[in-house]
Image (cartoon, rainbow, N blue to C red; front, side, top):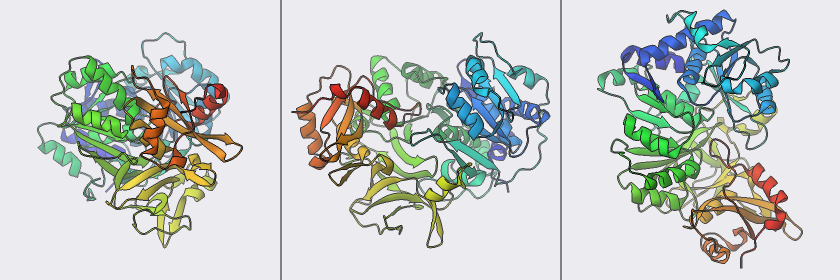
Length: 537
Protein backbone atom coordinates (compact mmCIF):
# COMPACT_ATOMS: atom_id res chain seq x y z
CA UNK A 1 0.00 0.00 0.00
CA UNK A 2 1.12 3.57 -0.71
CA UNK A 3 0.00 6.10 1.88
CA UNK A 4 0.80 9.19 -0.18
CA UNK A 5 -1.08 12.46 -0.61
CA UNK A 6 -1.64 11.80 -4.31
CA UNK A 7 -2.80 8.18 -3.89
CA UNK A 8 -5.27 9.00 -1.12
CA UNK A 9 -6.69 11.86 -3.19
CA UNK A 10 -6.99 9.72 -6.33
CA UNK A 11 -8.90 7.04 -4.41
CA UNK A 12 -11.40 9.74 -3.36
CA UNK A 13 -11.68 10.89 -7.00
CA UNK A 14 -12.55 7.38 -8.08
CA UNK A 15 -15.08 7.05 -5.25
CA UNK A 16 -16.96 10.37 -5.71
CA UNK A 17 -15.90 11.84 -9.10
CA UNK A 18 -18.89 14.16 -9.51
CA UNK A 19 -18.95 15.55 -5.97
CA UNK A 20 -17.81 19.17 -5.54
CA UNK A 21 -14.21 19.18 -4.34
CA UNK A 22 -13.32 22.87 -4.04
CA UNK A 23 -15.19 26.17 -4.03
CA UNK A 24 -13.30 29.46 -4.29
CA UNK A 25 -15.26 32.65 -4.94
CA UNK A 26 -17.62 32.01 -7.84
CA UNK A 27 -15.68 28.95 -9.05
CA UNK A 28 -16.17 25.35 -8.11
CA UNK A 29 -14.63 22.13 -9.40
CA UNK A 30 -15.62 18.50 -8.97
CA UNK A 31 -13.23 15.77 -7.91
CA UNK A 32 -12.93 14.62 -11.52
CA UNK A 33 -12.17 18.16 -12.76
CA UNK A 34 -9.64 18.80 -10.00
CA UNK A 35 -7.89 15.52 -10.77
CA UNK A 36 -7.79 16.12 -14.51
CA UNK A 37 -6.42 19.64 -14.13
CA UNK A 38 -3.78 18.39 -11.69
CA UNK A 39 -2.88 15.63 -14.16
CA UNK A 40 -2.48 18.17 -16.95
CA UNK A 41 -0.13 20.32 -14.88
CA UNK A 42 1.82 17.27 -13.74
CA UNK A 43 2.40 16.39 -17.40
CA UNK A 44 3.50 19.97 -18.04
CA UNK A 45 6.05 19.75 -15.22
CA UNK A 46 7.26 16.38 -16.45
CA UNK A 47 7.73 17.81 -19.97
CA UNK A 48 9.95 20.47 -18.38
CA UNK A 49 12.11 17.83 -16.75
CA UNK A 50 10.55 17.96 -13.26
CA UNK A 51 10.39 14.54 -11.61
CA UNK A 52 10.82 12.57 -8.38
CA UNK A 53 12.58 14.53 -5.67
CA UNK A 54 12.46 17.90 -7.48
CA UNK A 55 11.10 20.88 -5.55
CA UNK A 56 8.26 23.05 -6.91
CA UNK A 57 7.47 26.37 -5.21
CA UNK A 58 3.94 27.83 -4.93
CA UNK A 59 3.80 31.58 -4.30
CA UNK A 60 0.08 32.21 -4.06
CA UNK A 61 -2.88 33.02 -1.91
CA UNK A 62 -5.39 30.21 -1.28
CA UNK A 63 -6.86 29.16 -4.62
CA UNK A 64 -7.97 26.19 -6.67
CA UNK A 65 -4.81 26.53 -8.77
CA UNK A 66 -2.54 26.39 -5.70
CA UNK A 67 -4.15 23.12 -4.66
CA UNK A 68 -3.89 21.75 -8.21
CA UNK A 69 -0.17 22.47 -8.27
CA UNK A 70 0.37 20.72 -4.95
CA UNK A 71 -1.47 17.63 -6.15
CA UNK A 72 0.32 17.69 -9.52
CA UNK A 73 3.67 17.81 -7.78
CA UNK A 74 2.90 14.85 -5.54
CA UNK A 75 1.58 12.85 -8.49
CA UNK A 76 5.13 13.05 -9.91
CA UNK A 77 6.73 12.13 -6.57
CA UNK A 78 8.15 15.66 -6.54
CA UNK A 79 7.90 18.02 -3.53
CA UNK A 80 5.74 21.11 -3.10
CA UNK A 81 7.07 24.12 -1.21
CA UNK A 82 4.50 26.76 -0.26
CA UNK A 83 6.03 30.25 -0.14
CA UNK A 84 4.52 32.90 2.13
CA UNK A 85 2.60 35.22 -0.22
CA UNK A 86 3.53 38.20 1.98
CA UNK A 87 7.25 37.69 1.46
CA UNK A 88 9.24 40.38 -0.34
CA UNK A 89 11.99 39.73 -2.88
CA UNK A 90 14.81 38.98 -0.42
CA UNK A 91 12.66 36.49 1.46
CA UNK A 92 11.47 34.79 -1.73
CA UNK A 93 15.09 34.64 -2.92
CA UNK A 94 16.02 32.88 0.33
CA UNK A 95 13.34 30.21 -0.20
CA UNK A 96 14.31 29.71 -3.87
CA UNK A 97 17.87 29.03 -2.74
CA UNK A 98 17.29 27.22 0.54
CA UNK A 99 14.59 24.92 -0.87
CA UNK A 100 16.50 24.24 -4.11
CA UNK A 101 13.46 25.11 -6.22
CA UNK A 102 13.53 23.82 -9.79
CA UNK A 103 10.11 25.28 -10.67
CA UNK A 104 7.92 28.06 -9.30
CA UNK A 105 4.22 28.76 -9.81
CA UNK A 106 3.02 32.21 -8.79
CA UNK A 107 0.05 34.52 -9.11
CA UNK A 108 0.56 37.26 -11.68
CA UNK A 109 0.41 39.97 -9.01
CA UNK A 110 3.77 38.76 -7.67
CA UNK A 111 5.64 38.82 -11.01
CA UNK A 112 7.80 41.83 -10.15
CA UNK A 113 8.90 40.31 -6.87
CA UNK A 114 9.65 36.97 -8.54
CA UNK A 115 11.68 38.67 -11.27
CA UNK A 116 13.81 40.42 -8.66
CA UNK A 117 14.07 37.36 -6.40
CA UNK A 118 14.97 34.92 -9.15
CA UNK A 119 18.17 36.70 -10.05
CA UNK A 120 20.67 34.23 -11.44
CA UNK A 121 19.23 31.13 -9.76
CA UNK A 122 20.39 28.51 -12.23
CA UNK A 123 18.47 25.63 -10.70
CA UNK A 124 15.09 27.38 -11.21
CA UNK A 125 14.28 26.41 -14.80
CA UNK A 126 10.48 26.68 -15.02
CA UNK A 127 8.07 29.43 -13.99
CA UNK A 128 4.31 29.24 -14.50
CA UNK A 129 2.04 32.22 -13.92
CA UNK A 130 -1.59 32.10 -12.74
CA UNK A 131 -3.76 34.91 -14.09
CA UNK A 132 -5.39 36.71 -11.16
CA UNK A 133 -6.96 39.67 -12.95
CA UNK A 134 -3.98 41.97 -12.51
CA UNK A 135 -1.99 43.37 -15.45
CA UNK A 136 1.57 43.01 -14.11
CA UNK A 137 4.07 42.10 -16.82
CA UNK A 138 5.62 38.68 -16.32
CA UNK A 139 7.98 36.07 -17.73
CA UNK A 140 6.94 32.45 -17.74
CA UNK A 141 4.34 30.01 -18.99
CA UNK A 142 0.69 31.05 -18.61
CA UNK A 143 -0.82 28.47 -16.27
CA UNK A 144 -3.96 27.80 -18.30
CA UNK A 145 -1.88 27.39 -21.45
CA UNK A 146 0.23 24.79 -19.66
CA UNK A 147 -2.94 22.87 -18.81
CA UNK A 148 -4.46 23.09 -22.28
CA UNK A 149 -1.36 21.65 -23.95
CA UNK A 150 -1.23 18.44 -21.91
CA UNK A 151 -3.24 15.30 -21.28
CA UNK A 152 -5.75 14.94 -18.43
CA UNK A 153 -5.04 11.19 -18.23
CA UNK A 154 -3.75 9.78 -14.95
CA UNK A 155 -0.82 7.67 -16.10
CA UNK A 156 1.92 8.19 -13.54
CA UNK A 157 4.42 5.79 -12.07
CA UNK A 158 3.73 4.06 -8.76
CA UNK A 159 4.48 6.05 -5.63
CA UNK A 160 5.83 5.08 -2.21
CA UNK A 161 4.89 5.91 1.36
CA UNK A 162 8.39 7.31 1.89
CA UNK A 163 7.98 9.95 -0.83
CA UNK A 164 8.98 13.32 0.61
CA UNK A 165 6.95 16.27 1.87
CA UNK A 166 8.38 19.61 3.03
CA UNK A 167 6.67 22.17 5.25
CA UNK A 168 8.51 25.45 5.78
CA UNK A 169 8.26 27.01 9.23
CA UNK A 170 7.18 30.62 9.59
CA UNK A 171 10.58 31.89 10.65
CA UNK A 172 9.51 32.78 14.20
CA UNK A 173 12.87 31.52 15.53
CA UNK A 174 15.33 32.61 12.86
CA UNK A 175 15.12 32.08 9.12
CA UNK A 176 12.39 29.74 7.81
CA UNK A 177 13.39 26.07 7.83
CA UNK A 178 12.03 23.23 5.74
CA UNK A 179 10.74 20.36 7.87
CA UNK A 180 11.27 17.14 5.89
CA UNK A 181 8.72 14.33 6.31
CA UNK A 182 7.86 10.99 4.72
CA UNK A 183 4.33 11.10 3.28
CA UNK A 184 2.99 8.39 5.56
CA UNK A 185 4.51 9.96 8.67
CA UNK A 186 3.08 13.41 8.04
CA UNK A 187 -0.30 11.90 7.11
CA UNK A 188 -0.32 9.97 10.38
CA UNK A 189 0.79 12.99 12.43
CA UNK A 190 -1.25 15.76 10.78
CA UNK A 191 -3.62 14.34 8.21
CA UNK A 192 -5.96 11.94 9.97
CA UNK A 193 -3.98 8.75 9.42
CA UNK A 194 -4.32 8.27 13.17
CA UNK A 195 -7.60 9.27 14.80
CA UNK A 196 -6.61 12.22 16.97
CA UNK A 197 -9.07 11.32 19.75
CA UNK A 198 -9.06 7.49 19.82
CA UNK A 199 -5.52 6.84 18.56
CA UNK A 200 -6.79 4.25 16.06
CA UNK A 201 -4.87 3.81 12.81
CA UNK A 202 -6.36 4.01 9.33
CA UNK A 203 -5.06 0.65 8.13
CA UNK A 204 -6.13 0.58 4.48
CA UNK A 205 -5.39 3.25 1.85
CA UNK A 206 -8.92 2.84 0.41
CA UNK A 207 -10.72 3.07 3.76
CA UNK A 208 -11.43 6.80 3.63
CA UNK A 209 -12.51 6.71 -0.03
CA UNK A 210 -14.83 3.76 0.61
CA UNK A 211 -16.43 5.63 3.49
CA UNK A 212 -16.89 8.67 1.24
CA UNK A 213 -18.61 6.58 -1.42
CA UNK A 214 -21.00 5.14 1.17
CA UNK A 215 -22.04 8.59 2.46
CA UNK A 216 -24.62 10.75 0.67
CA UNK A 217 -22.43 13.85 1.10
CA UNK A 218 -19.11 14.88 2.57
CA UNK A 219 -18.14 17.41 5.19
CA UNK A 220 -17.86 21.05 4.05
CA UNK A 221 -14.66 22.51 5.45
CA UNK A 222 -13.39 26.10 5.30
CA UNK A 223 -9.72 26.37 6.37
CA UNK A 224 -9.18 30.10 6.92
CA UNK A 225 -5.41 30.20 7.35
CA UNK A 226 -3.16 30.38 4.25
CA UNK A 227 -1.84 27.22 2.59
CA UNK A 228 1.66 28.21 3.70
CA UNK A 229 0.45 26.93 7.08
CA UNK A 230 0.51 23.19 7.73
CA UNK A 231 -2.88 23.39 9.46
CA UNK A 232 -4.51 24.67 6.26
CA UNK A 233 -2.73 22.17 4.02
CA UNK A 234 -3.81 19.24 6.14
CA UNK A 235 -7.34 20.51 6.66
CA UNK A 236 -7.50 20.55 2.85
CA UNK A 237 -5.98 17.09 2.35
CA UNK A 238 -8.08 15.53 5.12
CA UNK A 239 -11.23 16.94 3.54
CA UNK A 240 -10.32 15.71 0.06
CA UNK A 241 -9.25 12.26 1.27
CA UNK A 242 -12.66 11.86 2.90
CA UNK A 243 -14.69 13.05 -0.09
CA UNK A 244 -15.64 16.41 1.43
CA UNK A 245 -15.83 19.90 -0.02
CA UNK A 246 -13.27 22.65 0.57
CA UNK A 247 -14.28 26.30 0.70
CA UNK A 248 -11.35 28.67 0.10
CA UNK A 249 -11.20 32.42 0.63
CA UNK A 250 -8.25 34.12 -1.11
CA UNK A 251 -7.79 36.31 1.96
CA UNK A 252 -9.16 36.46 5.49
CA UNK A 253 -12.22 38.73 5.53
CA UNK A 254 -14.36 38.01 8.64
CA UNK A 255 -17.64 39.28 7.15
CA UNK A 256 -17.06 37.31 3.95
CA UNK A 257 -16.35 34.19 6.02
CA UNK A 258 -19.84 34.31 7.51
CA UNK A 259 -21.37 34.93 4.10
CA UNK A 260 -19.48 31.92 2.75
CA UNK A 261 -20.71 29.77 5.66
CA UNK A 262 -24.31 30.59 4.75
CA UNK A 263 -23.83 30.40 0.98
CA UNK A 264 -22.01 27.06 0.90
CA UNK A 265 -23.36 25.32 3.99
CA UNK A 266 -20.01 25.15 5.76
CA UNK A 267 -19.82 22.57 8.58
CA UNK A 268 -16.35 23.25 10.01
CA UNK A 269 -14.17 26.36 10.26
CA UNK A 270 -10.47 26.11 11.10
CA UNK A 271 -8.67 29.20 12.42
CA UNK A 272 -5.41 30.22 14.08
CA UNK A 273 -6.21 31.34 17.61
CA UNK A 274 -7.47 34.75 18.68
CA UNK A 275 -5.99 36.48 15.63
CA UNK A 276 -8.81 35.00 13.53
CA UNK A 277 -11.41 33.97 16.09
CA UNK A 278 -11.64 37.47 17.61
CA UNK A 279 -12.43 39.35 14.37
CA UNK A 280 -14.82 36.56 13.35
CA UNK A 281 -16.83 37.00 16.53
CA UNK A 282 -16.95 40.78 16.14
CA UNK A 283 -18.08 40.47 12.49
CA UNK A 284 -20.82 38.03 13.49
CA UNK A 285 -22.17 40.52 16.01
CA UNK A 286 -22.32 43.24 13.39
CA UNK A 287 -24.58 41.38 10.95
CA UNK A 288 -27.25 38.74 10.63
CA UNK A 289 -25.91 35.43 9.33
CA UNK A 290 -27.38 31.99 8.77
CA UNK A 291 -24.92 29.53 10.31
CA UNK A 292 -27.35 26.66 10.79
CA UNK A 293 -25.01 24.24 8.98
CA UNK A 294 -21.96 25.07 11.13
CA UNK A 295 -21.24 22.56 13.88
CA UNK A 296 -17.51 22.87 14.65
CA UNK A 297 -14.72 25.43 15.06
CA UNK A 298 -11.12 24.34 15.51
CA UNK A 299 -8.02 26.38 16.24
CA UNK A 300 -4.58 25.12 15.24
CA UNK A 301 -1.08 26.30 16.19
CA UNK A 302 -2.21 29.17 18.47
CA UNK A 303 -4.54 28.53 21.39
CA UNK A 304 -7.57 30.66 22.16
CA UNK A 305 -7.43 32.96 25.14
CA UNK A 306 -9.84 31.92 27.87
CA UNK A 307 -11.88 35.11 27.58
CA UNK A 308 -12.45 34.62 23.87
CA UNK A 309 -13.28 30.95 24.38
CA UNK A 310 -16.01 31.91 26.83
CA UNK A 311 -17.38 34.55 24.49
CA UNK A 312 -17.60 31.98 21.68
CA UNK A 313 -19.33 29.48 23.96
CA UNK A 314 -21.82 32.08 25.10
CA UNK A 315 -22.60 33.15 21.54
CA UNK A 316 -22.62 29.61 20.07
CA UNK A 317 -23.53 27.22 22.93
CA UNK A 318 -24.08 24.22 20.62
CA UNK A 319 -20.87 24.65 18.60
CA UNK A 320 -18.16 22.01 19.10
CA UNK A 321 -15.00 24.07 19.72
CA UNK A 322 -11.50 22.62 19.96
CA UNK A 323 -7.93 23.84 20.39
CA UNK A 324 -5.26 21.67 18.78
CA UNK A 325 -1.65 22.23 19.79
CA UNK A 326 1.33 21.14 17.71
CA UNK A 327 4.01 22.39 15.37
CA UNK A 328 5.49 21.98 11.89
CA UNK A 329 8.09 19.67 13.43
CA UNK A 330 5.84 17.48 15.55
CA UNK A 331 2.34 17.40 14.12
CA UNK A 332 -0.50 17.38 16.65
CA UNK A 333 0.49 16.98 20.30
CA UNK A 334 -2.70 17.60 22.23
CA UNK A 335 -6.27 18.78 22.24
CA UNK A 336 -8.53 20.98 24.35
CA UNK A 337 -12.30 20.78 24.00
CA UNK A 338 -13.87 24.14 24.86
CA UNK A 339 -17.07 24.07 26.91
CA UNK A 340 -18.93 26.62 28.98
CA UNK A 341 -17.46 25.37 32.25
CA UNK A 342 -13.86 25.14 30.99
CA UNK A 343 -11.35 27.06 33.10
CA UNK A 344 -8.05 27.93 31.44
CA UNK A 345 -7.42 30.98 33.60
CA UNK A 346 -4.15 29.52 34.90
CA UNK A 347 -2.78 29.18 31.38
CA UNK A 348 -3.58 27.35 28.16
CA UNK A 349 -4.25 23.67 28.94
CA UNK A 350 -4.62 20.63 26.71
CA UNK A 351 -4.66 16.85 27.00
CA UNK A 352 -1.65 15.21 25.39
CA UNK A 353 -2.09 12.40 22.91
CA UNK A 354 -0.46 9.02 23.49
CA UNK A 355 2.78 9.90 21.66
CA UNK A 356 3.50 13.13 23.56
CA UNK A 357 5.54 13.45 26.77
CA UNK A 358 7.68 15.97 28.62
CA UNK A 359 11.49 15.74 28.65
CA UNK A 360 13.43 17.09 31.62
CA UNK A 361 16.59 19.19 31.51
CA UNK A 362 18.59 16.00 32.12
CA UNK A 363 17.27 14.58 28.84
CA UNK A 364 15.05 11.91 30.41
CA UNK A 365 11.30 11.41 30.01
CA UNK A 366 9.50 12.92 33.02
CA UNK A 367 6.99 11.02 35.10
CA UNK A 368 3.49 12.48 34.79
CA UNK A 369 3.73 14.15 38.20
CA UNK A 370 1.74 17.36 38.81
CA UNK A 371 4.04 20.37 38.71
CA UNK A 372 6.75 18.73 36.60
CA UNK A 373 8.02 21.12 33.90
CA UNK A 374 9.81 20.02 30.76
CA UNK A 375 10.08 20.27 27.01
CA UNK A 376 7.26 18.89 24.89
CA UNK A 377 8.42 15.84 22.94
CA UNK A 378 6.64 13.58 20.47
CA UNK A 379 7.53 10.09 19.33
CA UNK A 380 6.00 7.82 16.70
CA UNK A 381 5.56 9.37 13.26
CA UNK A 382 7.99 12.29 13.27
CA UNK A 383 9.96 14.11 10.54
CA UNK A 384 13.27 13.04 9.09
CA UNK A 385 14.76 16.40 10.05
CA UNK A 386 15.30 19.87 8.64
CA UNK A 387 16.13 20.16 4.96
CA UNK A 388 19.80 21.14 4.45
CA UNK A 389 20.36 21.71 8.18
CA UNK A 390 21.90 18.64 9.86
CA UNK A 391 23.14 20.64 12.86
CA UNK A 392 19.68 22.00 13.67
CA UNK A 393 18.16 18.57 13.02
CA UNK A 394 20.52 16.97 15.51
CA UNK A 395 19.53 19.53 18.14
CA UNK A 396 15.81 18.71 18.18
CA UNK A 397 15.56 15.10 16.96
CA UNK A 398 16.92 12.84 19.68
CA UNK A 399 16.86 9.19 20.66
CA UNK A 400 16.03 8.48 24.31
CA UNK A 401 16.04 4.88 25.58
CA UNK A 402 15.79 3.62 22.01
CA UNK A 403 12.85 5.87 21.08
CA UNK A 404 13.22 8.72 18.57
CA UNK A 405 11.63 12.02 19.69
CA UNK A 406 11.20 15.44 18.16
CA UNK A 407 11.71 18.19 20.76
CA UNK A 408 11.05 21.61 19.15
CA UNK A 409 11.70 23.61 22.33
CA UNK A 410 8.24 24.31 23.76
CA UNK A 411 7.85 23.97 27.52
CA UNK A 412 4.82 22.68 29.44
CA UNK A 413 3.77 21.63 32.96
CA UNK A 414 1.80 18.58 34.12
CA UNK A 415 -1.28 19.46 36.19
CA UNK A 416 -3.10 17.44 38.83
CA UNK A 417 -6.23 17.00 36.69
CA UNK A 418 -4.36 15.18 33.90
CA UNK A 419 -4.10 18.23 31.65
CA UNK A 420 -0.93 20.00 30.56
CA UNK A 421 -0.32 23.75 30.80
CA UNK A 422 1.59 25.13 27.83
CA UNK A 423 4.31 27.57 28.83
CA UNK A 424 5.81 28.59 25.49
CA UNK A 425 8.98 28.35 23.45
CA UNK A 426 12.11 28.10 25.54
CA UNK A 427 13.96 30.48 23.23
CA UNK A 428 11.50 33.22 24.28
CA UNK A 429 11.78 32.40 27.99
CA UNK A 430 12.52 35.52 30.07
CA UNK A 431 15.14 35.29 32.83
CA UNK A 432 14.34 37.94 35.42
CA UNK A 433 16.48 37.84 38.54
CA UNK A 434 17.16 34.14 37.98
CA UNK A 435 13.46 33.26 37.67
CA UNK A 436 12.13 31.83 34.39
CA UNK A 437 9.03 33.43 32.89
CA UNK A 438 7.34 31.84 29.90
CA UNK A 439 5.55 34.45 27.77
CA UNK A 440 2.53 32.32 26.83
CA UNK A 441 1.60 31.76 30.47
CA UNK A 442 1.52 35.52 31.12
CA UNK A 443 -0.23 36.19 27.80
CA UNK A 444 -2.95 33.78 28.90
CA UNK A 445 -3.45 35.78 32.09
CA UNK A 446 -3.54 39.07 30.17
CA UNK A 447 -6.05 37.97 27.54
CA UNK A 448 -8.28 36.57 30.29
CA UNK A 449 -8.97 40.24 31.12
CA UNK A 450 -12.19 41.36 29.37
CA UNK A 451 -10.64 44.64 28.14
CA UNK A 452 -7.67 43.01 26.35
CA UNK A 453 -8.10 41.58 22.86
CA UNK A 454 -4.55 40.31 22.35
CA UNK A 455 -1.13 40.45 23.99
CA UNK A 456 2.52 39.57 23.52
CA UNK A 457 4.97 39.33 26.40
CA UNK A 458 8.69 40.00 25.92
CA UNK A 459 11.77 40.58 28.04
CA UNK A 460 13.75 43.81 27.83
CA UNK A 461 17.18 44.55 29.28
CA UNK A 462 17.25 45.49 32.98
CA UNK A 463 20.36 46.56 34.92
CA UNK A 464 19.21 44.93 38.16
CA UNK A 465 17.40 41.76 37.08
CA UNK A 466 18.99 41.07 33.70
CA UNK A 467 15.60 41.12 31.99
CA UNK A 468 12.32 42.81 32.81
CA UNK A 469 8.93 41.35 31.87
CA UNK A 470 6.94 43.71 29.63
CA UNK A 471 3.90 43.38 27.41
CA UNK A 472 2.35 44.78 24.27
CA UNK A 473 -1.42 44.79 24.73
CA UNK A 474 -4.22 45.41 22.25
CA UNK A 475 -7.43 46.74 23.84
CA UNK A 476 -10.82 45.48 22.76
CA UNK A 477 -12.80 47.92 20.63
CA UNK A 478 -14.01 50.80 22.80
CA UNK A 479 -12.24 49.55 25.94
CA UNK A 480 -10.14 51.83 28.15
CA UNK A 481 -7.22 50.13 29.90
CA UNK A 482 -6.62 50.72 33.60
CA UNK A 483 -3.07 49.37 33.91
CA UNK A 484 -3.17 49.25 37.70
CA UNK A 485 -6.32 47.14 37.56
CA UNK A 486 -4.80 44.93 34.83
CA UNK A 487 -1.68 44.47 36.98
CA UNK A 488 -3.85 43.32 39.88
CA UNK A 489 -5.73 40.97 37.57
CA UNK A 490 -2.54 39.38 36.23
CA UNK A 491 -1.12 38.91 39.73
CA UNK A 492 -4.26 37.02 40.70
CA UNK A 493 -3.46 34.44 37.98
CA UNK A 494 0.35 34.15 38.02
CA UNK A 495 3.16 34.76 40.51
CA UNK A 496 4.08 38.41 41.06
CA UNK A 497 7.52 38.13 39.43
CA UNK A 498 5.79 37.07 36.18
CA UNK A 499 3.58 40.18 35.98
CA UNK A 500 4.66 42.76 33.37
CA UNK A 501 6.50 45.75 34.82
CA UNK A 502 5.57 47.90 31.82
CA UNK A 503 3.13 48.03 28.92
CA UNK A 504 2.87 49.31 25.40
CA UNK A 505 -0.75 49.85 24.32
CA UNK A 506 -0.91 49.13 20.58
CA UNK A 507 -3.59 49.04 17.89
CA UNK A 508 -2.64 45.48 16.97
CA UNK A 509 0.00 43.13 18.34
CA UNK A 510 2.59 41.68 15.98
CA UNK A 511 1.69 38.35 14.42
CA UNK A 512 2.80 36.27 11.46
CA UNK A 513 0.38 35.81 8.51
CA UNK A 514 -0.45 32.43 10.05
CA UNK A 515 -1.53 34.10 13.30
CA UNK A 516 1.50 32.98 15.31
CA UNK A 517 3.23 35.45 17.59
CA UNK A 518 5.97 37.57 16.00
CA UNK A 519 8.23 38.15 18.99
CA UNK A 520 11.06 39.52 16.86
CA UNK A 521 8.83 42.34 15.58
CA UNK A 522 7.57 43.00 19.10
CA UNK A 523 11.14 43.37 20.37
CA UNK A 524 11.99 45.78 17.55
CA UNK A 525 8.93 47.83 18.48
CA UNK A 526 10.05 47.89 22.12
CA UNK A 527 13.42 49.34 21.14
CA UNK A 528 11.94 51.94 18.80
CA UNK A 529 9.25 53.08 21.23
CA UNK A 530 11.10 52.62 24.52
CA UNK A 531 9.91 56.05 25.65
CA UNK A 532 6.26 55.05 25.31
CA UNK A 533 6.50 52.26 27.90
CA UNK A 534 3.78 52.76 30.52
CA UNK A 535 4.26 51.64 34.12
CA UNK A 536 1.19 50.37 36.01
CA UNK A 537 0.23 52.06 39.26
